[in-house]
Length: 444
Image (cartoon, rainbow, N blue to C red; front, side, top):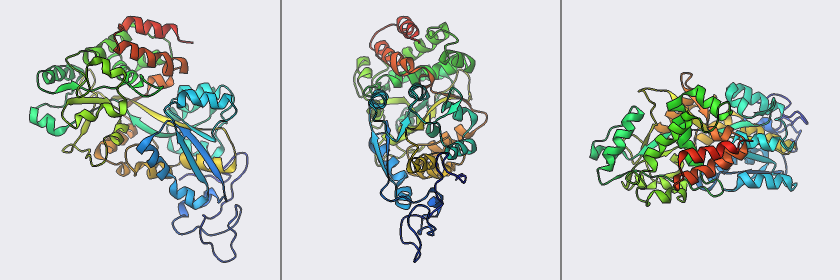
């Protein structure tokens, strides 16, 4: 863990022990000299605080929220800081409401760099303290640091990460039917047509996500733009150097439509194409387990949605492969992540923010299962399954062509606005050209 002396830029945290039984006569107050309590050695440099509370607001819900709370349990016990997490499916809208109403959280876990940029533009997000900057420089690549930077100011260190574009499937169902993992997009198309001739529906898909409904559809399009048009076009698209409705984007989106707007190919175990718009993304892949659909497109974090007792392994209940490229062995992937921004510079807030940017937190959280991180200090062996270990190795592989989730980098009005709603319109029957033209006209 990198924790430089002078943990905060505004007020240095004392290098003290953890909450617990101290040596006789030793102080337990911040600034004291108590030796770390047993098991708290890793947290000694963060200081001790009596009755301190830090609230965090984010989009992480359900079991993943439980694991998030568990990831800082030892930190809380050792420092005395009570970390109170509030998750909301309406975060994207409500964070602005809370900021404008003068009631921001101490820390916010932003799921999109574009949203971070828009909120930081109000002047409400504080620049990252020195200790967070140091951790970011040690454990995160320049690209990942840039995602948390707005107009040259570094505000937010990355937290978790995901490799997008996994295609999840049941190994036993595939073995029974003799289906093999495709190595190109053309082979995927051929496999989809073959599966459609069986008693299993090829795909199950869900775009539902509360006020964020539509984002799973943007992931499909981004994956196909990167693979069919290449990284240069992808970069030009997300920065609006080319129009949103450029021919390359139309082609990629139509190719997605050939799969998930085809009534013969969806929506296994759920209904017809119309159900995609309303099916919650967290539940959309579950028919894979029952053999009602053959494939589900979703990020590495979806491992945490399969439920208790489900084995993720090549010979287990469920497994996944990365969506292939136009040629075999293509090494281009999209991914996402969260970023922790602060609205308070209180000592206890900076202590929590620094911990969340460390390799210690990354290893603690990943070892609990379900997620990964692009933190270079993460030991891939701590990932909860072979699939997640492979995802970590993909992120750490210098030969991987990695591009951050496009909608997350676009201006909020588009990335978490018209692009999301446009995908719902599109899967509900609107044609590609009109949807993309409408999104193009909304670009600020």
